[in-house]
Amino acid sequence: MNSKKPEPSLESLSFEEAMQELEHVVNQMESGEQTLQETLSLYQRGQALVQYCLQLLEQAELAIRTLSDEKL
Image (cartoon, rainbow, N blue to C red; front, side, top):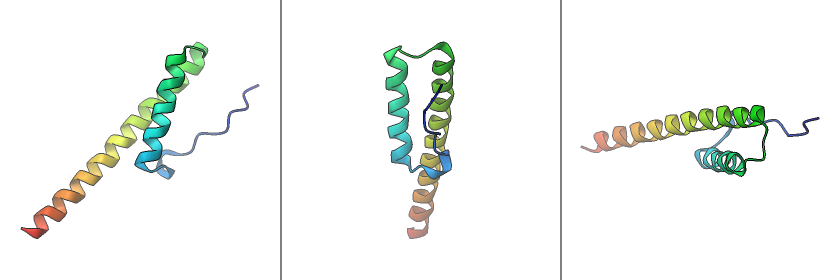
């Protein structure tokens, strides 16, 4: 029986929390101790975390550009 706690929704994570979780996912995958199904689940979560982090970075970049343009 799987007693893992549920993963937090991406929207509830800060950029730093998402990066920390992504690092944890990578470490788990590198350990090689998971079943194929667990590895697939980890990979899917990792991909979702990468996309979420990229989205947050794009939003931050847009905000910085907007602020920079306003000062000109």
